[in-house]
Image (cartoon, rainbow, N blue to C red; front, side, top):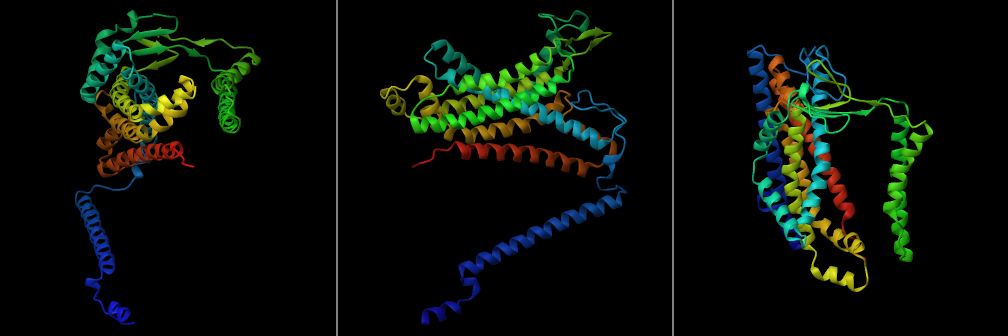
Length: 391
């Protein structure tokens, strides 16, 4: 009873729990006051300089062209649509860059552990050189190399039918638009869903009976076979939309600009070198005894890699891999240095024309925040899904 009475009489400044609550409340109050001061000071200064605030300008006519767009756009469209075009360009180069960086990084990381002396040395040189050249310099190099190495469209290189290289970009022939393509895409999605279901079933079957199922062949058969069957049933249309020289440039097909190619090369080559080191470290983190134990019970090399090495290596690979994917997305903002119309470039043009610098910078921050958080959430989900479960 005396102890409880004495505890009640302790002053709050001597009680660590009450002090913690007080300090947190005081900090929250100070941060709120600072935010209020900054916002109020900004609004007052904007009013003194007769600068309007808000996002009403997004509905105004942009009056500037964008050289590369994944959706329909013209100078008569609004600033809001122009910013959407920039965001989609950033998303496009980031997504393609992530996929290619993962593929090249894994190959180079495994090659660095190869027993072949030449392969191992080439992988080491690739990693050491590409990691230590700033990405901005790499972007300048690839951009300048593209313009210096390729001729004008009139003398474009044509190594194979439907493919042209010139200093205006790379023109590639594609299948002509056809209604069957939508059904082929649906067949591909269905094939991937079925493949995922078969993989889960095969894993459970392996766990219950110990018998293997050719998951890879089932994946290839479903993901490629279903779209192929759909294409054949529709009459196997083969008409192509081939690029053709019209005036000073190519028309038709798909045209990849030098800016896009240079940005993609710079991001992929730079990031894949760091991904390769993460893969190498993850594989080497698995002790040699694990591999020897798997070999001693008669597992094949493919089973050793998929069932023993990779599940343990992923715990080491995924965290730094997440950082590299985030870095690639944020490094894409350097596209402005070589003229690629990413979100930063379009937003800067919008700021220069409207004077809405605070809103423009806020949108740039918000855009990259959304991209980064989305990537982080996906990688964290995959990291949680791939962790080892103890029994």
